[in-house]
Each structure stands twice: as C-alpha cells, then as structure tokens.
Length: 124
Image (cartoon, rainbow, N blue to C red):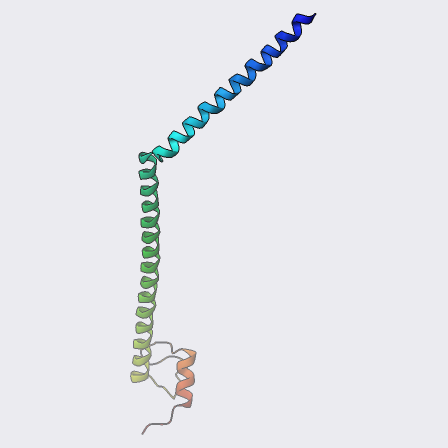
C-alpha cells in the first residue's frame, strides 16, 4: 500500500512541528520571567525570614549569656557566704585547739582553710 507511507510521514511531521512550538513557548516564558525578575512578594518573605533567624539567634545568645551571668552571681554569693563563715570561725573559734574542723560558731572550715591554719605562723 503505497498511500500508507505518506500518512506515517505526515504524522511524524506534525509531531515534530508540535514539539518545536512547545519549545518556543517555553523559551519565551522563561525569557519573560528572567527579564521581570523574581516575584517581589517571595523576595520580601525571604528577607523577613532571614531577619527573623538573625533576631532569634541574637535572643538565644543573650539568654545564654544571662544564664551564665546568673550562675556566676550565684557562685560569687556562695563564695561570700563561705568566706563569712570561715572568717567567723577564725575570729571566734579555737583555731589551734581540739575543736576539729569546727569553730565556736559551728562553721566547718574547708580543707584548704585547714591547711592554711596548720602552716600559719603563731600569733601572739
């Protein structure tokens, strides 16, 4: 059948023509979107998200610094209380006698404080 070969070539030609038109349409749309630039609303949302991340990181950093400062203050307060007890023990306790680790006020002297007292020169 000689006529069936022509029909097959017509179908192939039509498919190739449709593909060429599709490539042209996609190319034109891509070119227009490149010239117009990105969507301003999307760009604004990205900028706001970036600012939100920066502010969140700064807030978390500040919170950590405040927590560390609070711990330092608590440690200093505990040190002051300990040193006041140590001072009271030294002033009112029997530093060289048989009172053990306790003074007259009942405060316990640290191991470092005991060592210092042991090697401290006698005062008259």
